[in-house]
Structures are given as structure tokens and as C-alpha cells.
View (tube, one colour):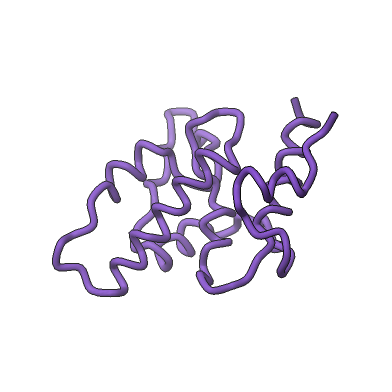
Length: 138
């Protein structure tokens, strides 16, 4: 038995028709792009005594997101409200539909996918493909 695209649609109510969610997963310059989208990004890891940086995934930890975006300011303008909404959606989809094995990080690529909020992507197809990929990598 396997999960089908119809199952994803029925369970999650995500659209299964529309544009494919295809984009570059290149993470080069992700911090600068994140700052442009949401106004900030996690700090670079500090260089240890040996001169090597810790390898960190492209994205943010859930604790960083909660610490910086837990409450939208009451006097926020439309741009700030959209920023907080985008971060909230990024947090939710990274915790549920597109969860990784660590349970600690929101990958950059999902925030990048939310750059155009009115795009008609087939999120159900993307969720199913991601699920299959995670099962294969187990």
C-alpha cells in the first residue's frame, strides 16, 4: 500500500493541480536572500580555533524563528504583516508537510518557494514527492 496524490489532496486539502513547484535548491547566498525576504537571517557560525566553521544547513532553526517572529508588532504596516505571514507559513510547512529528519531546522528552500504568495503551485504534488524522497533516504 502507498500514499497516492489523491490521498494527499484528501488529507491535507493542498492543491494538486497547478504549476509544478520547481526551483533551484542552490543555497549560495541564502543569508542575503533571506535578509531581503524577511529582514534578517541567522548569524554565521563562529570560526573555531582551527579555522574551520561548523557546517550548518541553509535555513534557520525553529528556535531562531520563534525568538524573532513570535509576535507581529501591533502597529505593523502591510509589508511587515506579509513578512510575518510568510515566516509563519515557512515555519508551519517546515514542521509538518516538509519536515526533515532533524526536526530542528526550517530549510531555506521552502521560504524561497513562498516568495510569490499568489503563485498557483501544486503543493500536494510537491508534498508527495518530498514524502517519497524522505522514505527512500531512510
